Image 1 (spheres, rainbow, N blue to C red):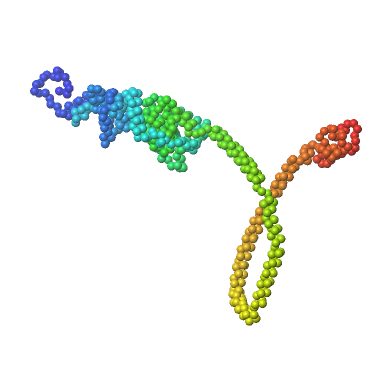
Image 2 (cartoon, one colour; image 1 turned 90 degrees about the vertical axis):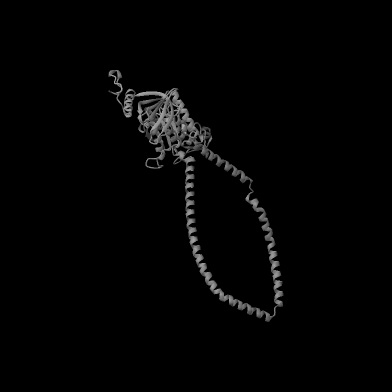
Length: 491
């Protein structure tokens, strides 16, 4: 008799009913359940969630009356589009199976999706609160953007319109080097690839063969909340918050908000706006530099003018040279007048003192003094020769040094004199060119002439008519047109 065969099809055999093992019963139930529920979608609230050390994930699906055990094996967990969290309302897709050792049935879940936008928003708000509590969204963590980055790293899809818009805007404003890290911008691989791209840009070596960007732009076009969900994942938010390189989030349109926007240093409403935040307008920058240069030149000219005026004002307050020397000159004249009389008085006093000393000196005493002085002179004379020798040697050395210094000073003086003479010659030549430019002789060479009436330059016809002598000066000489009174018209 086949297991689960209708008992009415066979004759009753009381007391002879077949016996089945526990494994037979469990296998039959397993085949029946898996055959009837090979692919089902179950909606419910996620209960407890347990991830075993093996990587398998066990959780419960429940409603107001029953609980369904669910399991996702390690290979299936990595492919889930959303990781179930306790309290979420989800739709789980998979197949029903049994677990014989515990006589229980369970749902082997292959995919999990939130049950509607409301569930997604609730999960998003819960995740945002948790990450905000860790301080990942604090304003003091945000870094200023570089004013003019040399290299800009862009994390986006290489085939979409987003990268073209960014490159076009950068080319219009201020062309920069751009490194594109291609990623999937939606789907189950989006979050992992975006997080790896941000970490990869930060791991680059500054100044290496492939230079590390000075700024990162994470960009994607608009879409539904499901399309943008990869940028709400925790790994993406943590990668953006831990980025050492300043980061601009340009995900979706202006009305779209994702969690990476809160962790980024700046949020751009569109990818094009992110490119505008990244670099200034080159023409505006050049205009600003020109304006600053003009202002600096004007300020320097004003400063020189003010300093010159102040110097003139201060110089007017100083006394003249003659006024400073008047009193010393007068004092010198008074001393010079007193000097002859003072010299005569001193000589007279010294003469009287000498006479007194000469009268009191006796010959014996004088002879003894002379003898003592001669001996002292001889001693000093014996010491004088070595001393003079050393002095001569020292003088020769000093003279050699002085000669070297004199030659160096002479060479410097010669160079300075030649430089000064050349400078003055250039200045004289410039003044001569200016004189020739301002003089009238250069004008004569271009076909003009100077008319002189009685030796003075004539500026009107009346001056010529009234003059007795009229001369016309050309470039190569003068010509006399009349010499004496002229009747009628000269020309």
